[in-house]
Image (cartoon, rainbow over all chains, first blue to last red; front, side, top):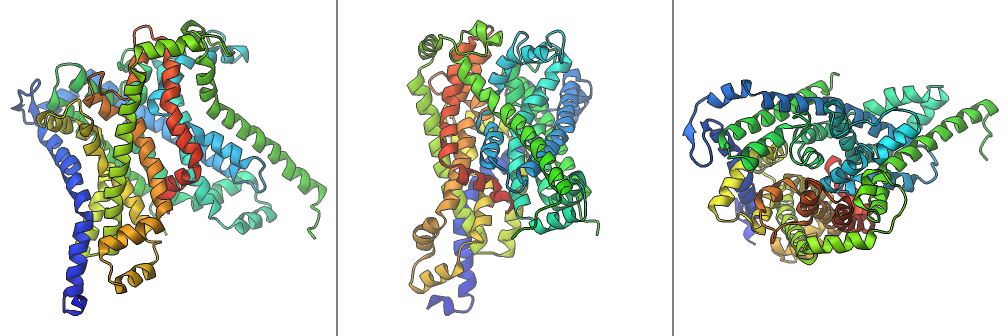
Length: 298
Length: 279
């Protein structure tokens, strides 16, 4: 048998190992590794269209003097700083409620709350746009219950447009995060909760002192993917605001600004690439910080 | 026999119970409402929709007729289906091979490469789209579906999912097959694939949904009406200066229907696929 030869096993491993992963590696190399370095390279060039010339750090100087970029940076930051924590807490609470012992209609509730994940980002943005029009169903409902006196301009007032974007993302992704927590909760031994309950620990304290610490790895994982997702926010703002990120750039995000710089006007590939590296940096720094904050202190 | 709890303890248990049902009902209603809104609005005129009409109207057939005049529905559906199905099959083929390879033939070098592959999960698409667009332009692939496919096939997430799932593949099966003289590709094709079919089903659901709903990259690459997918059509109808929301609703229903069907038929695989990443 060939495998009995000295080194034959290693050879067998290597040949098969490389063959099985080769197609994936080739594709990742061409369509991921190469473009990410190409972007870095481009970020040192400026000019319109294909007429690129070396600009050194010129794009970075341009960044600091670009009010739209600053707005996009602030908006993107606002979105994830406010939206991600709200969503994570909401998802955790819903998951603990769904994990209640002998809950009736658990399957119905779970499916219903998860359903938004099935909607495409474009479809739900368009639905929200129609629901949140000035005379629309949401304003009418809010006025009927007396929460507001006059209609809110969800799509025309800068502040409310931001609120709308946050509401929309929260609607779409809370159920998604909840499913992760629910799965993790179901792996936790119920007797721990039983013991705490017998000892008279109230529900909120069980949530804070038992549920959250035990779910820490999953919370970390979902926080990171949600943050990365929100930093890249594009589909929602594009479709809620006809691609403009309005009103008055109130909802423009970094991704939308890159798109506009590249594909809406005369393309500035170099400058857009520089902004894309701002996103790369943000993702890297935030992922690192979140890992660092959640590391085991013991 | 279970001891009857003391009255106070029982009351304590019933009270949070009611709050639980109320909170969950509100969450369920909020989650489902936009879908109900979509169905109701598809029967109303655009003016009624922006005025918030919450009852069924009689404009459904007009909306459908208008949608079919504005949009070449069979072509758009065919474009979406073609892209989604091809992407799904290719992604699963490439990623399952890689997941199997990384897990079954471990070496220091390949483990290091694997960590690098995982790191690419953090690369934002915005940092790729400009070079990818330039590449596709040079290759003359703008406005083709191949341009949509190529960059999406190698998915670090699906490779990760297959590798994690492969850890549960019984090694005795593989050893037995080797003794019988099967080659590694035969083991993969005739033993691994059938044994791991639930993993494949879950991956299918996830990739299909992602691909069907994909927006930004097709928006960049597909510029002619002949190649556009359903998400692009819905988006452009809705961003008109005065969008006809009745027509838009027909579009959102058609765009959502396939993923809704896949979800309800394969709900278990869907959830399993999503969770695959935290096992």
